Length: 401
Image (cartoon, rainbow, N blue to C red; front, side, top):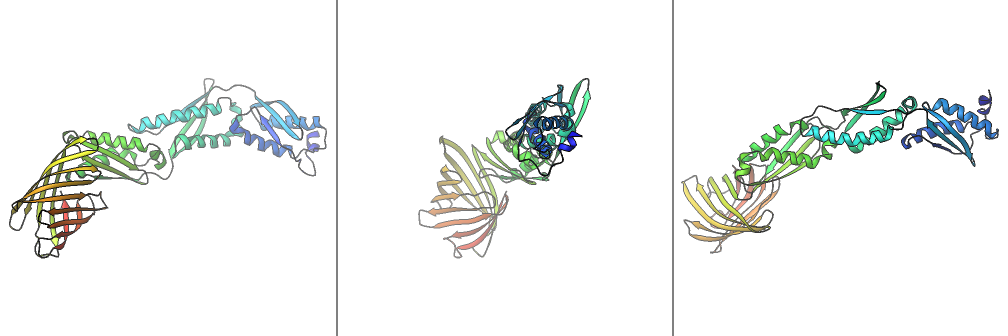
């Protein structure tokens, strides 16, 4: 009856509430609950009676805790709670079944999450879950956002042999990875290798499909390393001394870019056709080079080229030397036959879906160049110029083999 009388007031008290003795993540919920009660107690009533009501209500509100002390500091209520008993907590994970190396990554992330969760609940009485379950779910969701982004938790508590076991199940959240789109580029290896690279990556990285984008983004560097390991098993990687550079852009359709460059050899093959000129006919070409690095960042290459004109089967051959201190930029000199002319040469290469150019100039002042765009790994289109032709300008379509 006294409690009921004390709660019948004309207005709330302008005072604060401070809760002690509960975990910090639970303090906000406990404070809000007690503020609602304290604001309804008539501040004109006797202090002892007001505190007695606080003790009574707190005992019922905060199951698993007892009131150790209740006091006033000025107008503010200070309520100190104490757990009635200690609960021995264990934490289990309901992890999804994933193949290596994904299973190792998620176990490592889970261990970080498990330790953080245990730190939160180690002093929490089991009975407190009757009023603290919502706060606990929010706290664990926050931990998973940091340690296992993209995974949604489900909580189940059971008692087993005197231990309270909290099982945290994990389910993927949208957005998910729906497909992996590998792309490979190279300025030293033939395009025929790219189809093999794509097939290996599509097969090897298929376990990524269905996983949360944000979790894969957390392991972006590890995914790139995984892709490198998959490709390093290919025989051409060792025989041609291929250096792999892999970058990953996690999104629903995940882009995976691979740059393959041989440290020892350059191998190109192509066929080309011309439009807009009667002086040029379809051709097939082959470039073979042997590379070395004389200084760090300074590459040199001795190369030979053969160009077969398919209208009369005439063969043009070239022998040259080129060097580079810059990525995708080469300078060189070459000798060609049967015209027995010397040429200087510049290559400004570009990756797929980007422009590129090459220039040749002879000792007699003749100019030959192409400015083009790589449509994909196998096809390019060029504006072609050769000052030796009557129709010097044309459009050239190049198929890289």
